[in-house]
Structure formats: structure tokens, C-alpha cells
Length: 340
Ligand code: ASP
Image 1 (cartoon, protein in one colour):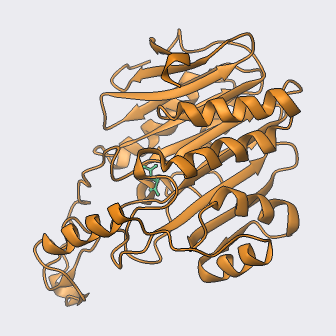
Image 2: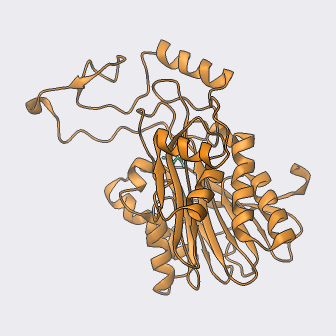
Image 3: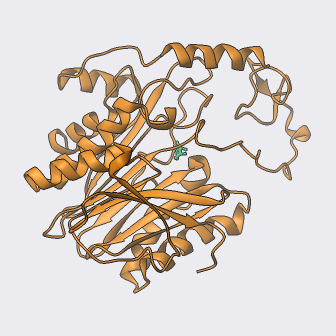
């Protein structure tokens, strides 16, 4: 596989290029890009291409952060996924999906078989079973071990605050501390965000007629509080698409990102005339204004095929691209410190 991957470090402007069809996704998830491209080339069906690409990442458990094998506080893995059709603004999404491996496949059924946009939790599982999916455990030997290690290190890190016992040194169960004891200046914990505890495949597919689909799939944040839903299944946060304008998809600290709808913002920025790089950077900068320690990234593509990305909280952010007239997947790295 790696033999087919071209690796590039480009300046932001050089990363902009024209050409559709286009498949672009977050991180070095090149097998997902390749899979989506194969389906797009064979069928010209951008929806099937997006589902095939993200499903590939779920099967591969890309970075351990897509698909099965990432424990929450109770040891269970739950999944978030989203698909948005840029032609009619239809959405299919699942959040906190339990016991079903192919979250993006279930999102496709929400898109096509229902008038709803987002199903969650055990009832999303029931829906998936009724659509023919198999119920199975999403735990793996590795996730069981991770969870045991986490318990043995006093449940660190975790996502609690203003509770007793002290969540920085002890496991729960927790209860709220008195109102007067709450420190409102308390800064958001700097979650040690890296490829092993966080990531999402966010993918944009544009077919040769400029029909755009955008989507995401992730298991969210390791050791999340059960019930937590990240940004990935939230339209405008995890991904957004509109034919004739463009699309965006995000990865990073989703609890913060969903407060700013960065994918929606980036697409609005394209609509208002910004270039993809500027559109992405503005979406990230709006978050940094309030959360200077934020870690995350947004990929952006115009409907004509120019694309770029912006990132924060890491040195470089890699994303994967396959487009017209290109014989292989490219990995492009954006330098997060570039100002333009
Ligand atoms: N955005 C995802 C979440 O917070 C994780 C990630 O992309 O790193 O659920």
C-alpha cells in the first residue's frame, strides 16, 4: 500500500489545486482515500465512495480512533458518524452508537431510509439491527488492556471537573462539589491530545459533476464519560457540504469544536469569497480566540476541487488526497504555524 502513497510537505498555497473528481480526508488514512477513489472511479457514486472509504478506516481501526477498540470510562466503545449530501442538504448521522461496528453504514441508512437526521445510543443500535446490521461487542483485547491500565492509574486522564472526590487524582463515582467551591476561572484541562487518543476520519468526495458528500466516523475521545457525543456527528461541526459552494470536515477536540461549527463556518467563508486556505484558517482562528490551547484541524474543498486545510495545537497536520489525473494518493502536510 505505502508504495502507492506520495508524501508531500507543501506550503499552504501550493496545497491548493484544481481538479475533480476529488477525494480528500483527514490524517494519513491513505487506504481509506484509495478505497473511496476506487469506488468513485468504478461507479461515479460519491455517496458509496464516501461510505466505502470511511468503512475501510473503521475496519482498519485507523489510529485506534475510528471503529472498535477505544474504551470510554465504563470500558465500552461507542461510535459517532455523519454523512451530508451537498445536493439537497440531507443528513444521516448516528451518535453514541453501541455494539455496531459499521457506524458510517448505519448513517447511510439514516440518510436514505428515514426523514430524521440523527439517531443515538441503544435506539440507534435497534435501528441498525432492523436495517440488517449485526450486534457485536466493540471491545478488543487492546481496549480491555487500555481500560485496565487507566483504572490502575487512578482513572487519569478523565473529563470531570468540580466534583468530589478530586477527579485529578481519584476515580469516581463522583458527585458535584458545593456551588461556592466552584472555581469559575478554572481553565479547561489541556487534554493530552494525540493520534492515539483522538482522531476522526473526516472525508469529502466530489464527483465529476461537482456533487459533494462530506462525512465523518470516529470513536471519539478515549475514556470519555459514557453518553458523550463529540462534534463528528453534528452537522456543521464534524462536516458540512453544499453543492455549488464546497465542503469541510474537522478533527480534534470535539467538545470545543462543536461550540463553533467550524465546518459550517469554513463553507460559509467559501461562499463569501475566501480561498480554501483562508476559509479553513478563519474557522480555526475563531476557536483559538476563546481556546488558545485548542488542538484540531479542518480540511476544506471548493466544489471545483481546490482544497486546503488549517490546524492548531500540533506542529503539522497531514491529510490525504486523490484527485483527477493523479495516479496515487498524496499525503500533504500543513504547517500549523503558517500564518497564511
Ligand atoms: N473530534 C473527535 C471527537 O472529539 C475526535 C478527533 O477528531 O480527534 O469526538
